[in-house]
Structure formats: C-alpha cells, structure tokens
Length: 143
Image: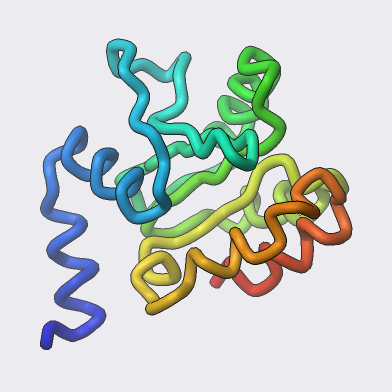
C-alpha cells in the first residue's frame, strides 16, 4: 500500500485537466463541460449548491480567494465554493475563517485523501444553508 506522501506525489504529477477530473471524482462533483477558464468552476455538487475549484498548487492565496468570490457572485444558484489544493497561504485561511456565511471553504489534497473524509460533508446535507451547521461540517478541514 502506498504511503500518504506517495499518494500526494502521484496526484501532484497529474496533468492539470487530469487533476481537476480526479478532484471532481473524489468529491462526487459533476465536471464542468464548458471550455476550461477562470470564469467557471471545475465542477459542481448540485445537491448542496456548491462549486468546486481544483488548484494544483502549494500557494493558493488571497488572489485565488477573490477570484472565488467573484465566481460565487456570477454563479447565482450556487451558495458555496470548495477550493481544493495542496496547501493554502496564511492569508487565504484567515479570509475563509472570517467568512461568517462559510461561502468559501478550503480543503487540502492531504485531507481529501483521508478515508471517509468527504463523507463528513454530506452527513449534514439538510443543514447546508445554516452557517452554524455548515461550520460544524467543515470544522477541522484546514491543516
């Protein structure tokens, strides 16, 4: 069985579109069918009105958070965005923590690879519009 570091290294070596497809498969998202662009998310989880952004980077920061905020404004029927990356800069973590509505959530690939990890997101699916319940769902997802 591969170690966690080996699994992360395998994911990191994927081509950009292959990585985005892998992320969508891991979270059960429907892959975006329009031409890849910063104007569109990489996938959608329709059941919880959530967009997925897959960033193949160790330096996801404030600029990426601002783009996600703009995307959230453009995709009116979606209420939340999950950004999945290898690591996040301190400033984006602080921005996400200050978001009282929990509209933009951060998940590392390391967390995503943990067994039964993403199922925690869906166990409170009926509470997804409640910011307090949503915060409980996402609690501990950032490392």
